[in-house]
Length: 191
Image 1 (cartoon, rainbow, N blue to C red):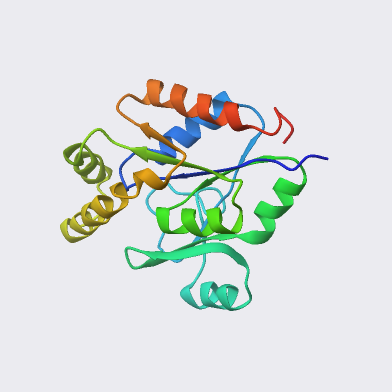
Image 2: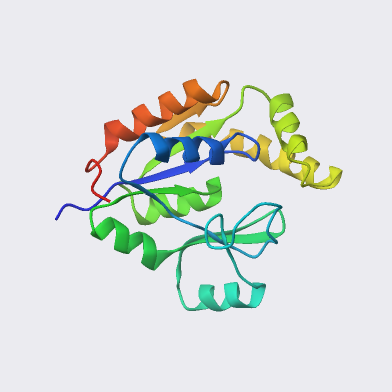
């Protein structure tokens, strides 16, 4: 059986990565989206095990020590990571896998799995990123400033990605993202 393809989607907070991934999986059949583990508290409306695997800082550290993560990073004071076993199992079964992770984690995975496809999602401008972040109503002014500072750093990494999708219009950005994924897929609808 042929192994699946790994697609790593990252970009700054507020770029619309989650929205595009949600639309992508309804449009392109057979994709499996990995659920990241995190130490941060759930946002309103987030479902444990579906949006994130919410775990304590102590458990997260234990899993780091045991080598359970394919990648992990500390972002905005919280830890996020991708469980190695679930991704490797899905790829070995021939599934195409989507990881929606920050750039730091994206480069860790790319180093470990060089055939993975890096896709960077961005917004049309920094002011649009700020508008989107503030529109969520989940962050303090200080957290918004931190996210914008991080976004400026992340935008400098665009040249290290295989593809860049500007999320200026959700429908058009979904079209572009779907085209990229379909051009790199190992299988169609096999998951």
